Image 1: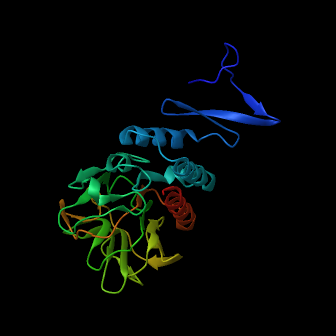
Image 2 (image 1 turned 60 degrees about the vertical axis):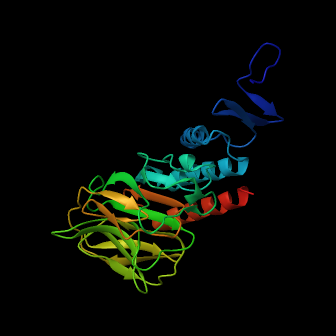
Image 3 (image 1 turned 30 degrees about the vertical axis):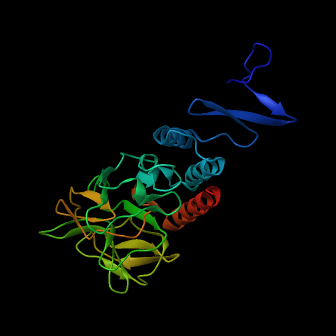
Length: 283
């Protein structure tokens, strides 16, 4: 129901000298004395609520809006080309609404695999998402990926990746015996300890000679020569090996992003704050 003054609908309202802004979330008018909801955040929230069939908690809405506004202020929003917040939404359908880019294709996940606070968990056998983001869409030397993993990555499992062989061309994030292996458009990866790192992690490439890696709250630079990327789609919660999923993960995934090179420290701050706020907003 619209707010009326007599028979007129006001375009602006004030409480003292503070303008009360109006925004729409779905069909609902929302009035706030704070900043208006960012239009990209509002479009995403509306799509999630439509998929869920009900509204999100106010705290979840605020967390999403703060994330989008913050990424824009940091200058990293446009580098996020494919992304899902796999937490916060009330249903699996809502969680699979893309924050950016094309929606992922769901292979075998069901409602019970989704937790609103910790994300989507696989079975180690058949369950994964195809992000529908081909490895060669982003530039050979202009690319990033990131994830948020509350429980980390298991050894010999892949949280994100694609590998084309003959010759080897990796974009991947996988666990090894004592470290996590990162690669972007490379013939092999670099190992970064420890294996039991949790939370935000990712890699970014802006040159042909090295990549930046964020793991365990630390960003470092590692030598890694780039090669032309493959046309394989990147999978999450598994690895795409020449078109076939393998190395299925069993730990939960709460966020992923893929796109152009960006500042990983800035993205870490925004994603970690988003996850903390979502956790606090959900009973």
